[in-house]
Length: 100
Image: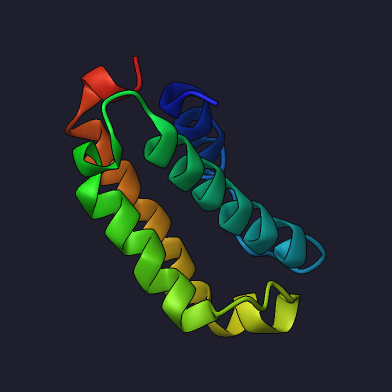
């Protein structure tokens, strides 16, 4: 998985929101896309050290969420989940060579 492709998946969640009927899907997708990007960054030829802030943000999120990917737990941590997504998006926008 390339960072570019994983980041595109994360960006695809930017216009979505947590609405009745779709919230569980949306939060699960954001969680999954963040972890897909995390795996891509850690296996990128540039090395995980090239992506310190995004990897640290996901690690902090994981410390809060734990291994519980249930809707109830993701809903409880929704603010942090969305904030992590948005902060990583901002970081990546400042590093366009990493996703083009």
